[in-house]
Length: 507
Image (cartoon, rainbow, N blue to C red; front, side, top):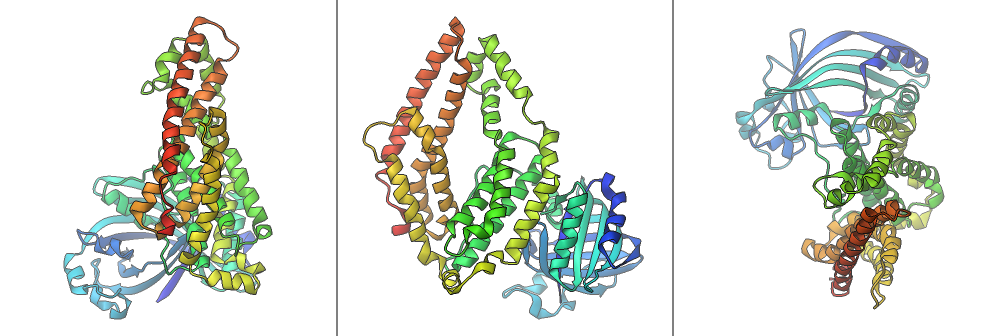
């Protein structure tokens, strides 16, 4: 068995000529292997039994020689892929599952039934250029450039990827080479494997943006340290998923999901302060803050789009005031373009941030400042700590909505960021508790948060109308007042409902 440890990057054809020189600068020696045309077929059963077990089964043929590979469930953090894999030669291009040692299969897998139901699901065919790099310290790294396509049924996607895999030696040198590539090339860290892309094509399930941040999949037997790892890994994956979604279909809501993922990462560093010292994450938090600032315009842009969408009530009102339509159009015209956003995602700073998060997570960077107290805290079951962590937020949230008198629009607007931050604790820890109780508790709070976003939208339009006393603008202002009053009434009902729900973590 080998354990594959590699970093994957997505590159454009324009950067390919620069790769050999960069590798040479980094290495003590470089061996350039002949290019090969690799033809790969991926197999599964009609019910996707291997996929359900996170097992990949592939045959690969080149120059008449074929092998079969099984990749078992592993870890994927940022662009770092770590998976146990088994390779065996075969005659022809159909897998022979019984050739593998029986011990590699998860408990309960019926190998005979699997073998009888296998069929080729999709293929990847590409030209591979390979360089074997040896560093001054003796670490060996294989650098491969794959250019071709993944295909399933009549669907095809291009492949243009750079992978660096640790052959032997220190993982830190793999990260050092990655830093050099990111410093010098406009590339992106690749989260999805060729197999993951192939499954989506075969099942006609394109990558789609999530509707919400969701819950980190914690287990009751996770330690606090393991919970931290899962929260960070979840947040990084969420950011990278929506970065990829944006390249495939650029929308403002997809960018909002990117900021949601960044916020979850930042919140995780704060939530687990028992084992993560603030000073140890100062640089990471600074870079996360930078990324959020780069995308800080997104919510305003969503509001402006709402004003001009025929699906919303705003459109008819605004369309009756040409001056306001012009103002909104001018504001939209100065927003960052799709190319501007994609330039962020291919920038050195953004990809170094992803790499630094990946390194910090895989190398457990928080342990560098640990003493005995942090060691003991890290080993504590997260389920035993979750109630205390959620209680802390609960006390603050109660203070936010406890006043008996109705809250004004300005007060709700001031609460928005604090409410969103507190609800992120539920995203991190909520999976540990009963789903129905959790949903009942969170529902009115989520209604209030959604209401504050709508209040921001109404308030922003009111600001755009200020200073104009024409009849159309006066009518819009009156309509905005009516909409605000109606929204506040609904939010007050949600606020009242929060007094009746019991904290789900105390049940």
